[in-house]
Amino acid sequence: MTDGLANFFIFLGRFHHLFNHFPIALILLIFFIEFASRFEVFRKLKPAITPLLLLGTISASFASLLGFILYQAGGYEGDLVELHMWLGIALSVMILLTYLIRVVKISIEDDIKNIIYLSLLTITAGTVVIAGHQGGSLGHGKGYLTEFMPRSLKSIAGVSSTKTSENMTVINVNEAIVFSDIIEPIFQNRCLTCHKTSNDKGGLSLESPNEIQMGGDAGNSIIPGNSAMSEIVKRIILPLDDENRMPKGKSPLSEDQIQLIAWWIDEGASFDKKIKELNVSENIQSILKKVTANSVPEDEHPLVTIPALDTILVKELQDSGFHIWRIAQNSDLLRIVYVKFGDSKFTNEDLIRLKPLLNNIAWLDIGGSQITDEGMVHLSTFNKLERIHLENTGITDNAIESLVSLKELRYLNLHGTNISDASLETIAQIKSLKSLYIWNTNVTAKGISQLEKKRPDLNIESGLTISARKLSPLDSIDL
Ligand code: HEC
Image 1 (cartoon, rainbow, N blue to C red):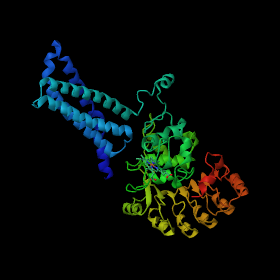
Image 2: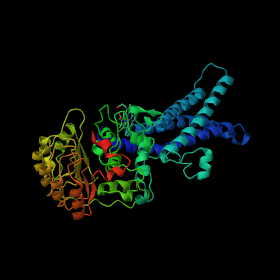
Image 3: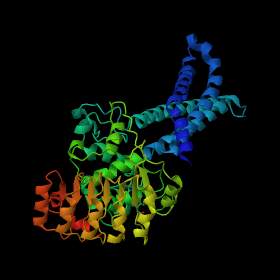
């Protein structure tokens, strides 16, 4: 499905939220008239029942259809949504039967017919109440009614306090805790049906921080500081038809959700840090704005003068294993990840293939690739580069010279390479650089302390600091 068509379906489907009020009101009205008309004052209303039932049948079917379109177009998922869908369909069938039993002449005794009719009507009305309430929870997030229940009452009622709305609303962005306010709701809504303690597909439960850190059958699912090598991220960016893609068999996560998860991991996958404690790129900032409740009107992204994207090339690259996103909605700057599934490897030739996009590539993840010093020379012309992953590659000190000309470079990941203290002197010249990852390299403590003196503004992850984190770097090196 093309984006335009998908968007149109979502647009159409969203009228479900408006339209579903008609069958709900109609069915409850019919139920009321049916019983009230037994009393003298309301007797006159009785003839209205049959036409109202027909109208109810039509509107319920139409509301279900819109709901189904919305569900198919994506954005909603999970047990609750599926149950809601079946309730909606059951409701449409039941009100149709109620109508039919009233109007179609069948040869059963009137008494029995009447009992069947009244039972059907009662069940239909009951279902509409349940489906309506449930739909409300879906629209407003599960626990809408109980969200502001006093804490003491919650514990008595056994209502959990965890947020489950996927599009969480953070009141104060900076004070929000990245994991519990942003990442966890995504896991809860899109992954937990298959990855919880009681049902851990692939041995992976994403229900608690401990379990997330334990990973799944394949080992760690998250490598703090390295989203591109983290199984979770690798899996959510696979092509739609790849059977390893997560959420398995369901609509993919939105680009924003993928970027938020990748950002959280790149920034160390902390479970308690606040947004203000992490590096927030312009791109993440604009995504965060969207998920903020009282968000200020979105600034226009400054117009960047870059050549129009070569869309044919982008398509070609995507087909050959590159994942390509725009880093912000109105920007032609790109994030490119080469996904290393199977034997395919990114080589120097692949970097040359990216050259037509050198004015567009802002993020490049080619960690674990077969790039060499020779190929690195080409990188010096990628002047829009802000983030680059070169970890676990065969590059040496000779390669680092090519990075000095990059005026926008903020993030550089070199862990698991053969660079030594010589590189640190070169790196000190990259004035824009904010974060440097150099654990498991040949650099020495002395080299690092010299760099720290020259560049106190630089955030260096050398293995000494990262080991203070919850996951030891040694666990994550043997990729
Ligand atoms: C409909 C069920 C389903 C949903 C939803 C789902 N997964 Fe999975 N997931 C699976 C199954 C089944 C496996 C094991 C088979 C496989 O490896 O493909 C798996 C495996 C994985 C693994 C590999 C674990 C390991 O160590 O082998 C990761 C990582 C993963 N899922 C992440 C996610 C994330 C992140 C989400 C939410 C965005 C998600 N999954 C949603 C069914 C699901």
